[in-house]
Length: 241
Image 1: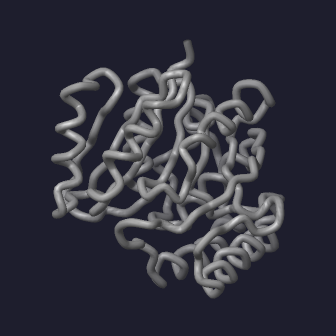
Image 2: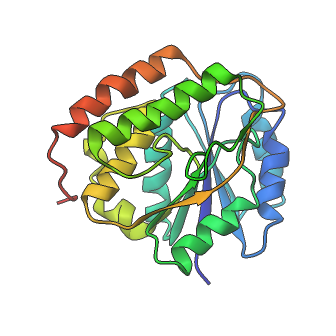
């Protein structure tokens, strides 16, 4: 059976973490979970440790000291997953903005439909976002349009954080060369995979704003993405040596 792991970065997600892990474990096909907690002061890690007692083979956690950035959390998780021999590596938020059931559709896109990177897309079939303020929808939608214009990559949701990688994609990408740390990281990873010739496929999803906990979005995150995309346009993308 293919080995599958869902990487979930956390910072102060005690309201959600127990339920999101349980929802992933309830799926058919045995998805493992790797939580990467950035020193949450609210006790998120303690909840995960408690759950690990009954799922030591399928629930894993890496604890880091302080908020070190979304991109570095995922890169840490990618390296761990490759080392542990996982075939399919997923990214997902902890707050149920991504429906855990859609993990099955992302997996199917890679396992049966030829994708090497499947993207849970809010924008490939119009706008599929629930309970976001209109200002945030506009900012997110036009950020992706900006990326398409600058980079020439025909992906409608370039900042999506709900994805499935086949392991050969992450084995080929030079992770030491990845520069962006916030949501620009999502753009950089997709662009790098595309430039290296991998097959990217968007899978339409419905994105729902979190009901519990607080958003980690900030203006600085978008500033990094805006300027970072221009830098990406002129960078030579090489596979890992």
